[in-house]
Length: 86
Image (cartoon, rainbow, N blue to C red; front, top):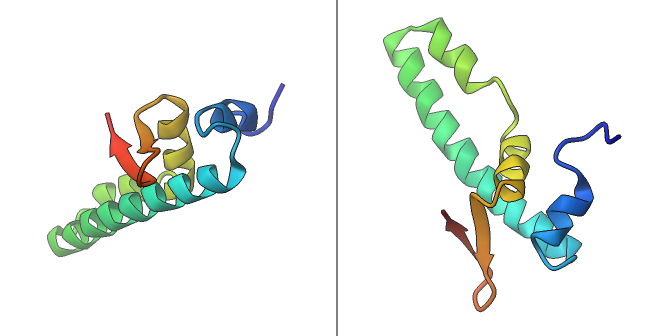
């Protein structure tokens, strides 16, 4: 049983067992997620709704990115190593 979900072997399968590619893909996606969450947080602060602020900070962007990679919601283009969303 793994303490960390998704399991690293599942994530590595998604990137042809290339840990550096996995790191790059997860980092790019986490950056995008962080930008989106920051936008939601800024909007929530403007509207002064604590519920939206709490919802936006529930999980870390890197954890969200790894989950999306494991579910095949995010992959990469082998030619350019660009992130693809499904």
